[in-house]
Length: 90
Image (cartoon, rainbow, N blue to C red; front, top):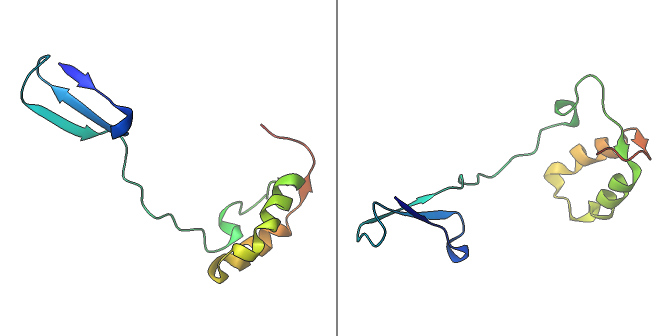
């Protein structure tokens, strides 16, 4: 079997029974992306104990607040009220 992957065909693999075989089969190695929906509320993420969020991350997200669609703004506003930390968690 011959397998061929090219950058120009990212996520696709070409297969042949033998080197130089005429018949080829192409298949995808990546799953199709689907539109992801955000949770309806922040309670969905951490229902019991909310993890503190790094202050720097919250500040970065707050800078983008004006770009958040109205549909999701309530979700983010509850997250902005979560406890914060200055500890970097890896």
